Amino acid sequence: MWGYSMKSLEELNNKRIECAINLEEPDQIPFNLSIASNWACHLAGVSTYEYYHDPMVMLNVKLKARNALNNLAFSKIEPDPGCFYLVPRALGAEIWYPRPPESSPYNDPWVKPGTVKSLEDVDKLEVPDPWDVDLVRKTFDYYEIMRNKAGDIITLGGWTLGPFDVAALLRGPTQFFVDLYRNPKMSHKLLKKIMESTIAISEAEERVAGTTYESFAVADDLPGYLPPLLFREFVMPYTKRIFSKFGRSGLNTWHSDADKADAIAHLLSEMDVRVFDRFHPSIDIEKLKNKVGNELCLVGNLEPLLVLKGQTSEVFSMARKLITKAGPEGGYILCTGGEVDYEAPIDNLFSMVKASQEYGKYPFKNG
Image (cartoon, rainbow, N blue to C red; front, side, top):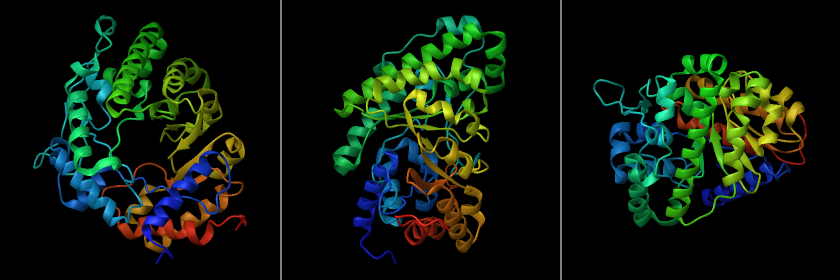
């Protein structure tokens, strides 16, 4: 189907991604299938509750998904018993793991709101010793178990939930947006403690993995709804500090799937961001490319709902349109605008790969 072995396609795609991140033209537009753990669980017929609570189940689920996708996703496998929530847990949040039959077997964990109820609660927060945090220790234990079984394909860290999103989880999203106006001093104090906790945990991950991160990724959805002035004040100082600590290459990734995030995209390079990752499908990628294409590698933004419910031909056609709009002059990776739903058909994912092969060749011809 693809013209060469899947192993070589995986290697070629990784090289093409490197070129795109460097704002260069590879020989062909690369792709990212954006598969989440719950998609892999659904494929394997394993509940997310089982997945998050057993390192061997976690490993086997991801290996099964990796094989089903012909090594085109999960080229590296990370233990994630805390999902996105190591930092919230480190600051006292309670994590709820959905469990059948009370919930769908494929729902992800979430943070119970209201950890930080008042200014006094912010003052009580302390930057943790990572080894005192149960979920962090569990992650490190999973890493050792999985690496002993599967070797170098197991990795650790290199990304985090952004300080703004963590603050919204601890305070509740609506309350934290109100805080920005009514209690800006408290908001800054909370964001600073989250940033320091993030750095402490990521430093511990470096030590456990025996590595030094040269690039780093931050997922921070809610800041995409802020006007540029507030984004500069409440997001940039804290995210930039994280990138300056761990993103030494400057080739860092920032993700927001807010449908207004294009309004702050021009500010991302000031935080040492090179990759704007999986932005909302409603954002006009052609306009965004014209606006920031000389500064940012764009990753997106095919509608996940189309991948879930559309025909293979429809996914292929939309992928082709995105390639036509964002492909010229490089710096583009074909992907969805957000994660793929866990019921998305595998053939629709392969349609994206096929479109990149048939219409993503460089030198690029528009249309």
